[in-house]
Image (tube, rainbow, N blue to C red; front, side, top):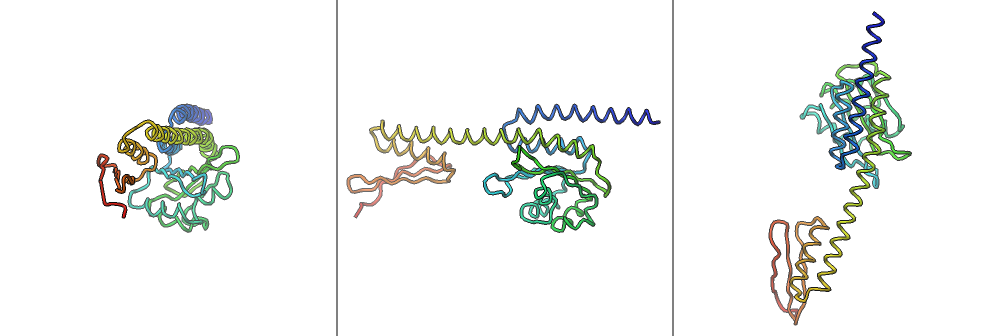
Length: 255
């Protein structure tokens, strides 16, 4: 009997190691942050046979919530949990952020640390949780949590596996953030260069303004950009929106 148990344990360990290697390849190859969070959420739930899983990513500048990805939450109960997870202290997320190490919640119904989320978790049928921090060095990027459908002990194997997942995901997420920052900065520089070149090289002011309006729209994310040019005592307005082409409107005199 003991040999059968040992064989099953070895098989489970090999299965998890294979899943960890596969996850590492996928999350490292992915450059989209939301896709990475989705992969992490799916891997955490699937490999630990959890009823649900959640990944929360913090905003590095404000310390608030940048993104949340979940799997297995009933649609009717998820909004209340999300709202509490974003702003309350008495949540599983807040406890893990506070101590920066794995935390187990063996009985959601009787755990005093979960006052803000207890009702929404129990309504969703989630009675047990374990979470680990997403760390890169001393920087806390976020939290990974899995949930069970019944109260009970959290195994050391589950904690170790979640920690390994978080270690692999943390570095990949940090690299994706750096990639996004470089990409956005490059787009800004390219747009500014195009606008500057248009102002210097183009002899027709209307065409110059068209390029400037296009670049301002792309860089700012605004719905509408309007530029006014005073020429020979009259205003010429360049207006561009995301839904329409650039339009020039010759308006009133300056006096």
